[in-house]
Image (cartoon, rainbow, N blue to C red; front, top):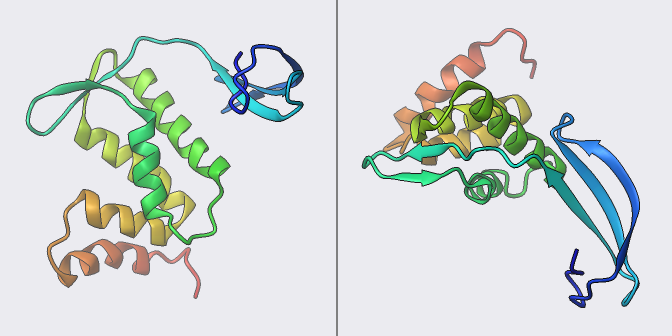
Length: 155
């Protein structure tokens, strides 16, 4: 494994543990050249699910795109990178478990929103406003109405 700092190819593993509900191995490493530490993840290489976009084009599932959208929605919210990684892992695991080769982008967006709503409602509304292309305040009100009516929520 090349060090991300000095690009040396001389490291040692300090710690290994299961991560992302057992679907990955997290390894803490130390570069023996520059002595800096970094983390790597090892995952099973699965067949890539293709995303069918609105225009009918297809592209491989890309975790980076999901993360970018989540980071924008969670800007200045009390959400850690670890929590974002858990959302991404949950979405990816659901896609791999439920779809063999292709899935519509709409279904991916709904999975992201489902997981985000459980994590942070403000981030959920931000994500939904872009994903569902809210046109005016009434679109926000329609999205918020079920959340405000939920008796489990307290002020």
